[in-house]
Structures are given as structure tokens and as C-alpha cells.
Image (cartoon, rainbow, N blue to C red; front, side, top):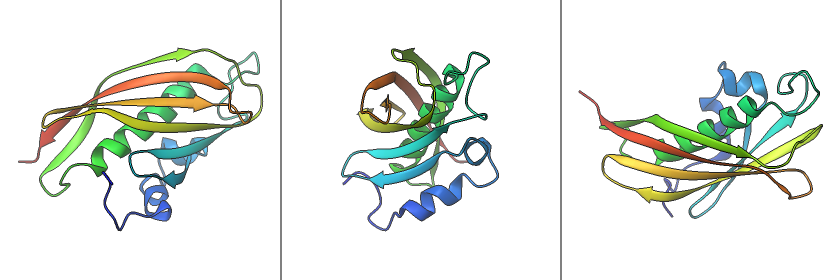
Length: 140
């Protein structure tokens, strides 16, 4: 397992309290051997004017998941992680319900990490695929 053994869903969700994550309703739902899963509602907070899930909301979900996952793989007493670059390809629109994101590492290095985030509709159809590059920074 690449994440701390004492990690809980509740502790992950506490990190997001009083942040954009909390405002958008993003909730972590599963911790796997090498992945994290989270959901986000498709509602008035996350839709664009045409009534579809806003692409920026997808990017917030992806960045949240990649950043949290990266942070969990470093010694947080000595290092922290920040985003360097993120991209997203929106492949299927979503009008309501929830989307589910799953993030897995592509590369976990000493100074950079790369995480892939796939976002699915409630019917398990791929809605968005994103990749984030994280910088691993030493605390001073």
C-alpha cells in the first residue's frame, strides 16, 4: 500500500473542511492499495449555464484528488506537494447526479509525481480524464 496504514475516509474528508472541496461537495469514498476514490455532485454548485457539469469543477475534483494522494506519499513533517501542471480532457457531458473520480499514480519520484484521474458518470461512463504533475518541496 502506498498510503499510510492508519488513513481513514473521515480524515481525508476533514482536510477539505471550509475549503473549495467542501463548498463543491467533494467527498472521498474509498482508499485502495494504490488509488483514492471521491465523488462530486452535479448540481447548482458545479454546473455551467447550459446545465452541464462545468469543466472547471472536473479540474477541481482532479486537482483535489491528485494533490491529496501525492501528499499522502511523502513524509509530511519534511515535505509537501504542490501542483505544477494539470490537464483535462472532457469526453462526456453530465447533467445531474454525481461523478466519481479515481486517482492512481503514474510516477512517484523524489522531486515530482504524476497522477492520473479518471472521472466517471453514475453509469460508469468515462466523463473526463486528467493528469496532474506535482512538485515535491522540502520544508525549511
